Image 1 (cartoon, one colour):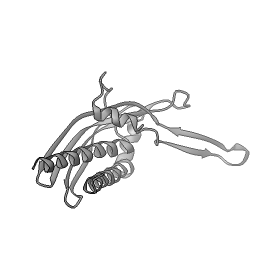
Image 2 (tube, helix red, strand yellow):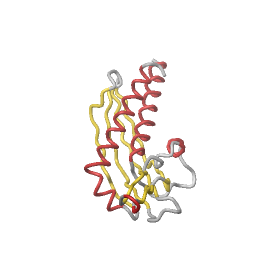
Image 3 (cartoon, helix red, strand yellow):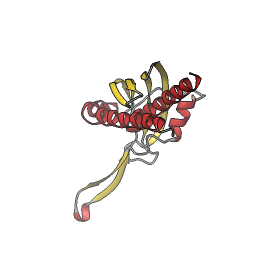
Image 4 (cartoon, helix red, strand yellow):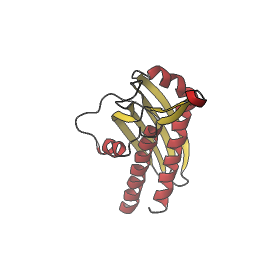
Length: 180
């Protein structure tokens, strides 16, 4: 019984960690972090979730072609407000509220930041690693580029974050089942 509980708690921890990771990898936002980060916040910050949020772009052609990198690839704030977990047999329900604010580099031509606070609710069957419920909703948009994030959320950002989160949750469950 004790070993089963330990394994279940380890699985829950893995699922939560990867859910929070996946949530932030695409784009999310939050108010400034407190002076002391939680264990999960510190782990997520170490993963540099804003780093992939840049793109090489070209404007013009021939002699008038200009290439530059644009992006909001610098982390400004990360906050996990709350994580709640319920375990019943092999069924795990979790909710997570939090987000991430990413900004431009100091030498950017167009300076600013963007983010969105999000709410995630998911149910996972640990026996089959099947996600039986998944709901990811933006709560508030923040920053000077908030209108861009809000416009891109329904068609690009939300689906990308959901896909990443689902993949991370399933991978964490499979790792747990394999004893990793």
